Length: 476
Ligand SMILES: [Fe+2]
Ligand SMILES: [Fe+2]
Image (cartoon, rainbow, N blue to C red; front, side):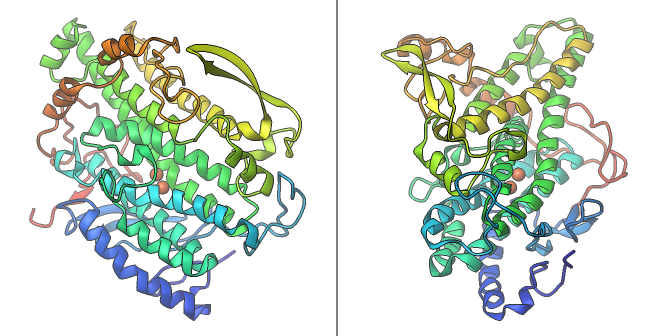
């Protein structure tokens, strides 16, 4: 068991025992804090927020809850405890000891993966920085900030790896992680979904459900890595990620429940009527779902990928829960894919290692469906016939074999003209966005009060009631 120690940077990696590394990270820290002031939640930096902070890596009781000003949050470096004599669990090096240092030939590939993961963490904070101004309740405001500070900590986790194991290149990459900006034309973030604006709370809930869940699966795959420090750091990140997805799942659920309640009470089901009654109609919820799900599917990369094959072969990145698969070398066998040729779908058998992105995406899709089922149960309980659903994974893709194809949510291929003529029914358009934003014009900051479009949560945070003062404004 490794102990968390204090100092400027809380950690359980014995930072004090490596003065050079400690100095380098202490030099990066002011840049991080400047970035947080510039790009973190706008307008709330002086407020007291009821946050959890990691204080240990034990499964029970790793978190401490208290009021803290966000700039004073104790961002630290926490690795899950080492597994004694850990062996590589897949690929060509299966059975060999896990790496405590990076083999030179894999350094570039590993650096790319750590940088890509690291880049998503500050990106999401940037995407969400204005949401506090339109929070639907203090409970939700607190959850937003919890997600934001933990994404900041995830950035620390990746920067620790860059500084410790990648030499000068790693230090330069750590600087660059603070220089790119979500949505910036000149210095965008690396991955598409992390440059999309999150301008309203429905998008935030869809993002934390679908896009943070991509994060979960990337972290699960990296938790299998032969590079042991990466495995240990991602294992601890997963404990924090679970809360982000909870925020998304329950956020969408509460929106669905509130709409369903108003539908029952009013007897109306036309979107125009429901909009007049101040709730988000179900077809609009479906369009937001379609958008964020399809953007998140792209994050897994191409269906047929030699990079993915190499990452698996070398041991850099495995599958989610690798132990559940019968064959950890995946040298034999194929994966059946429906590819697009001359505007038609055709079946193609792909060597298993080349299909590893798709295998990970499969696990993600199954996990996404569970929340959709819960949302639909809420509709069913109200006796409403509408059902939300995940669109086909061919729908609205920009990466991989379906990029450039025009599929409807059922997966049928259309002409570009037909697709464009009908896209308004499938993806949020300007009027949907304007309506959703019209519901979110000011912060709802009375304890226990919820915005009219959103149901109340079942319970509060850490045993506190729903009407607890989760955020204390500085000038309240
Ligand atoms: Fe994260
Ligand atoms: Fe997250």
